[in-house]
Each structure stands twice: as C-alpha cells, then as structure tokens.
Length: 426
Image 1 (cartoon, rainbow, N blue to C red):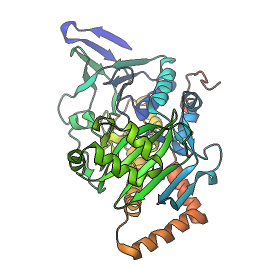
Image 2: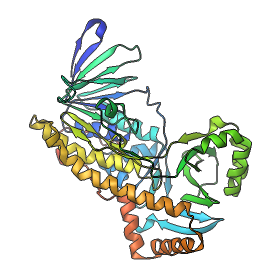
Image 3: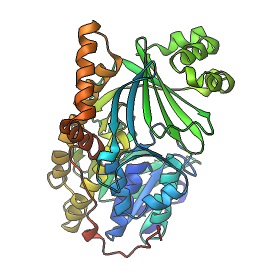
Image 4: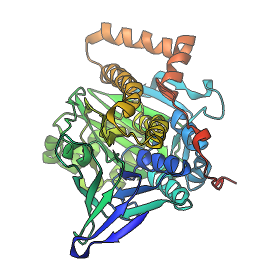
C-alpha cells in the first residue's frame, strides 16, 4: 500500500478494497481478501476493538465459515460456552425443544462466543498477511466520487485528531452496522420495517455453577425473557418490552424492574436482586428489521447489517453476516481481477444473498408471533401442536437445519487463497 503525505490535510492511502467496520463480517471479508492477494484497508471507529456488542451466539453455519478460515478453534480457546439447542418454557414446562444434536458433527451445537474473542482472533490472522492496513479510531466522513451518481473510488476518514485521511480504493465495502454511515453517505435508504412489536433489554449476571447448556426463552404474561450461558460463568439475559416500553420501565424504576424479572425467572431471582443495582446495568436494543433496496453500486458494496438488519430471535445476525462475506469474497476477487468493480459485476452477490435475508425476516416474524402469543386458547393449542411437530418429527429436523445453516449456506472459497497462512488452531 502506498501512503502519500499531504501536509495539514492528512495522508492519502492507495489500496484495493477499503472496508468500513471491523465487526465479524468486515474482519472475515478482510481476511478472505488478504488471502486472495488483495490489499485491504480496514477502518474502525473504535480503538482496541472496544465496540458495543449485542449478539454473540454463533450458529453452525457461521462456525463452519470461521473453521474454514482457521480461526474458530483459536477464538473458542479464548473462552466460549457450548449450547445444545433452543428451548421455550412457560412456568418451567418445556413447550419447545430444538435439539442441535440432530445435526451432523462437528457443527451440532450453538456457540456463545464473546465477540471480542472472535474479533481478536480474526484481527490477529489479518495482521499476519501482507497488504493489510488498520485505521483504528477513524470514522468515515465522505465517499470519494466526482459526482453523486459517479463511481465510488474510495473514502475520506477522520482520525482521533480529526485530521482526514483519504483512502483511494477500487471498492468500498460498508460493513458498519445497522446504522451504517457508509449507506447514509451513499444516499441509500435503509428500508426500515418495524415488523417486531418488542424491544429487548440486555444484561448479564455472574452465575457460577448455573449453566444450562441451552438457549432458553421463558414465556411470561405478555412478555418473554431469553437466557443463555456465556463465558466466563455468566448468564446473558434479554428481557422483552413492548416497542416504546422502555420509558415506562425507567419511570417505574429499577426496583420494579427487578421484581418483574424475578417473577418470570424465579430460579435467578437472587442473582437479579443482588447484581442489577441500577439502570446502568441494562442496555436497550431497539429491535427492527431493514432491507436496503440497493446493496451494490459502482465501486460500493453493503455487507451484513448495513444491507439488512434482523431481530435477535433465532440468533441469525452474525450467521447471515459471515455468510454474506463468504458470498461476496469471490465476486469481489473476480471483479477486481478484471478491473471492473461495477454494479453489474457486483450484482450476483445481492442476487444471491437478498433472498436469504428476506427468508430470515419472514421466519423471525413467525417466531415472534409464536413466542409472544396472544389469540386465546385456540391460538395456544395451535402453537403447542406446531411445537410438537418441530420437536419430534423429521419436519422439525429439517427446520432445525435451516435455522442452523441458513437458507443459503455459503462456504469459503479457499481455492481463491494463493497467499499461504498459518493454521492458528495448531
């Protein structure tokens, strides 16, 4: 990569691909491109990967991609919790039991993998390869274009000292999340859909010896609470609230919130009362779906949550993002090899992945209706029958495979890796 000083206006960097956002998708794509012999500049607004984290459950489809990249074992060794499947309970009665043991090994479980562990392992693998530049503490400020409708040829990013750095690139990849600044600068509408009637408040408690080995959803009166093990010796808990209900919860205060949580989770009541001491212990996630109409333009691509956002039900976000990266990788390599990073050449990526994202959205809407109920005794009876089908029949096994591996189980094109890499799992 060439770096040219430009006086008080910062520096100019020349690279092949500029990736905005060092989340799981951005880092995974960066690693794939580096191993394909391309130069990549990765721009991340945080420093030392001090990012905000929400989801950490990794489905088998995402595990497979990380394994093919040679980073899964190392990330897991940093600390993770293995989970056997999903359960839905009401007053400790199991309504639904989705057993991932039905799946083919080695991807026959869920993995609660703290995102810092995953990101650190991916970043370490990137650092071992030539052509990699990381701009930490930098935020995208502008896209390089001669006119608003002309091809994108890079980005201007501002560092901690607010001095701009110009990154000239053949392609800019926006992997900067559901509130993507890259997408906004391109003038692409997020396509937000308020498809879910609930938001989620996340927190965790220290709970040694109380691991369940499951992701459990505890249904209460008009609400649900998600609980799963995480590393180290903790329980991660997601409390659902009606859209906009957070303000009312804040007005009621932490004492009322503790009692409400203890009523739904009596087995963890002591932990909640002891460890949730203020509103600062709770983090609100605004739950919505989005699906941008455009994922590709000349010299520009949106990846993961920047292109499509999903709710937390079914733990699909990281899975989809990693599969997006695996699908985009060969498309980018081919387009850049031919010197033609145009919307037409990049379109196969969107054509392949947009239907998969839309299918997950439809599935999550159905799952939300089932989890949060309503509709009286008849609806409850139908939900129970549907749960029995998923739990006990071959149809249920098929549904489990679809949830675990996705509607388009993309794999890594390792045949496009001329650059040798160290197997970090040995």
